[in-house]
Image (cartoon, rainbow, N blue to C red):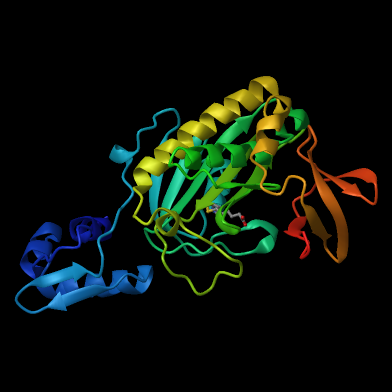
Length: 318
Ligand code: BTN
């Protein structure tokens, strides 16, 4: 609590004196400096300390705040630091401490999870790390295409920022100029044959300007638009699109969204290599099936592929 108060006060990037900060927290000036050092260590943020002026952040922070997120359909909780919003949502659902629908957002993830066992780099207050836990009724049929629909929802939120070149890469990466802007990880809790909770994790690179430990080409909205983006406004947009698309999917199935998904698929008609463990399959992208599978033309035959462990890349000559 005290930590967020300090950060909220310093978020404007202006100088604040030790007296002011101490009074805010009800502690001494030296205790303020200790707390700031703790925050530096925990978050990777850095503060300037100038005698006679006080403290300021190296750059202003756009912190998440419930009051600035314009979405009230599902309850939203903002966490400061967590291992992973997906892991936390799963723990809450499984331990009966959380009942879908609910949304978790975090400023910082220490073990952000990506697809296929990868890590999701999650620096403090830079990007969106959002998990929506929603109940899916109707068994396996209602799960078909779900992860593609979530990608479509995020792409639609991004198009509203005039990012017309952003598009999808099967199953649910969002790419811009060939680089990854957003990734989606869906995990399930409960009985997929009956009613279960889908833990829908969305990572979106927003104001991140550097990161040396990402093992694939990436881009952020800051780089694409040349300006910082308000993460609260963006979270509202993503949640509205997500809720609308999930309703469409629930009532009409993926059939209603398949054409739109293919229209947004950046690799439609391209020659690709699909990796499934050690197996590599070369083919031309025909589209997606009603179950969300990838349809490829492989040596003149149409084949469909599905599964969380598959990964796709363009053939060098395509
Ligand atoms: C991918 O590898 O493309 C999926 C990345 C998903 C990252 C998001 S960030 C919010 C949520 N919490 C996690 O630990 N992962 C997802």
